[in-house]
Image 1: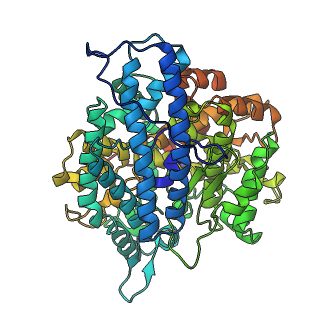
Image 2: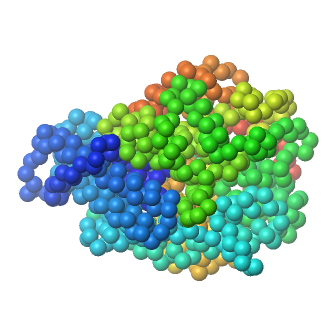
Image 3: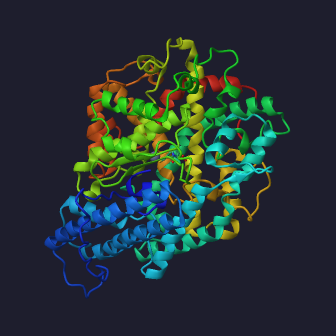
Length: 618
Ligand code: X8Z
Ligand code: ZN
């Protein structure tokens, strides 16, 4: 999550910032002009374009600050009032961007310097949910988003007997329980959170599509796909290419995990050659499976020798101490430490006395020093890694602070999601020993176990990362209609993940609504891209640090050379096409799963040996 997006309200895909000075009075936006192809428009000049861009950046800075402040307050203190104030602020920002994006068409045929042309293009693609021109509809769209976001944050499953579980409690049970009936019950209970959102989501899609059409896009999904410095159709093909690269690795992992789960729960629950029931994978969305690692640990090989959750518990690390580990990783590479306000203003633990959105996010409130994270940290390996993920966003935000406002964003949104993860790949046994969390580095014989533990999160996620927006692209395009929202969701989960709902589903359910990014309207393909990109970044930073051994054992902790390389990539923000930034950072010109496959190559061989003579695929 990042910047305005981090408001969890899905207003902008772009950078937005505000000076630490009080918000300026917005410059009046020029009235939208007829499209450049029209004959009536007066010829615009490059000078007017420059002035228009400067005014736009100033106006959006002020409105972004207000939207961020309101969004933060709504997410960390859910009430009807904070929800309403946030909806209003997000609407004001979104409408201003929409008006400006339409007005920018006036310069479509004007010869402009490349950076100005890029800024206008980015402006036109900045909105994640573009509001329709009709003010009532724009306000309705914003209210729908704020209300779905708040409902998700308040979501609970009340078990028979009266005990109510919020997402944290649900996550704990899904991670640790091995009781199939209990897992099934909690899985069903959490997914019920989505159902009441269905009519609002349906209307949200209509309104957002209307706004996208006014900008000249086929639908909102087409607009999202247009944001990757390449034609939208090419982007879809790129995603498919990456999936085909990693699919064999996923299928091998799936087959092995299915086999072991069948032994645990019996063939009536887990069929030998079919779909794995979604409630047995350690996570309520079955998106990452690391929590059930003990159930699939290699029988005849050395174990990893440690469990990071146990190390954190043994040291009794609290949320601040865990976050300090993340900060120290970045400072060890030469980055400045986080400002005092980060520690004063972040929400690191779940408050006991009011409702919040616990889903982790990173915020850049004012485009200056005021970066924060919002989490409900628990002493687990999962949250330790997520802290690094979130700090990656904050260090990115600080690094591109020197760019003009319209360039203050990730090179593409997958980059933003990949930075902290690339750093977290360096949490190796040797790193844990260096920072005093582990006494003895396990022998090389433990590598298979460590790689399997890692694959349970990194590889397992891939098809989920892909299918969420396959679903949403279909929803926005109309290919998936409200009458089959849930069926289409499960068809994709069956096809890509090879998993099945553990209980009968129907169109009375709306399971996508029980996944944060759907009510929050955060595009999801970024996480799929990030899974691939993070290994590219990691490999490149390892090389920069002078590391030459097997990729999975590398940690670039403490490497100033790697830090300088990372800083150069981050500070460019979105100022040039991501392909150029990627090339400078990695020497590679395309997103490519080669580094990920190299990392997991020893595991792939091992998995294929385990799967010999057993069913593979579904
Ligand atoms: O939403 C997130 C981050 C915040 S940007 C915690 N992630 C996705 C998810 O939780 O579904 C990180 C991995 C995928
Ligand atoms: Zn993120």
